[in-house]
Length: 308
Ligand code: A3P
Image (cartoon, rainbow, N blue to C red; front, side, top):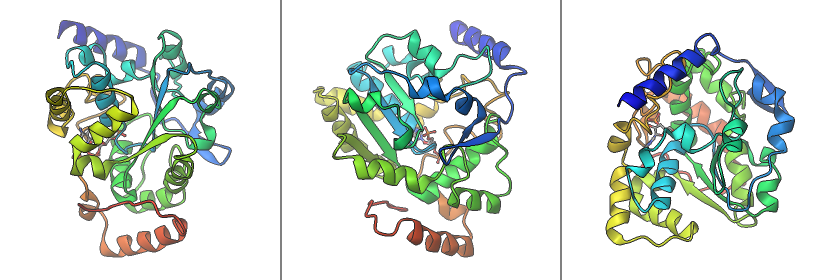
């Protein structure tokens, strides 16, 4: 606990006066944080090792959940080993950039030896080319648009590094127009879906993970060419349940200082459910969203589910 407290203090000292609601700049049609765009040439030139693995998601689709599963699988279910550091230190966030002295994703990557488990929210066309050239393993997690939007909305409220969310109505419009950080949800999920077979991407759904976490943990295990004992797999399912992760200080993002993540506004581990959108969308908003969705997703057969 002492060590964790020191780390939190260290973070707070570094981040005070540095964090603000950073503006977005469009890069190749994708709105990204200004610092990401300013450092784009080094991000896109990142050269992974063939043993590195990428966990790619649209923000709030279940990144942290899959990260924890992957780490536990790699450590044969050893929960203490997976508490060696916080999620942000265990999984460098490829494109993330802050003003100094906060380390960037690339800084963390430089200090870590392969194999590394790298997080990205980049749409597929912006992923550094080296990942494909080296045939790195890539896990993609997708979540149905309405729940993804709700989760992102609450995240914008509590994350002081993201632009102001505006009203709920404005937020829905911005989501539909692809104006939020990391761009269009529609293009994101379609981009990875179209390439999943050709590029050997493991394409997962948040809803499938909720429905049958054991089945999905096993899918990830096979993709990683691992074979763990039955009781270890059961334990990993338990350790990555919403309740256990919510109380895990190395996975629940309470390690991020309050000046950036204010959990009193909305917890990072907020609800972890499928169908929470029904508590947010009015019938009129839902109808308008669905009509637009049919247009944007026309001709695409990604099996999203908005309820279980
Ligand atoms: P909610 O805001 O709907 O609760 P990401 O990690 O991509 O930022 O996604 C965060 C979302 O995943 C949040 O959704 C969070 O609660 C949910 N989540 C994180 N761990 C989870 C788990 N073990 N089980 C279910 N949902 C989880």
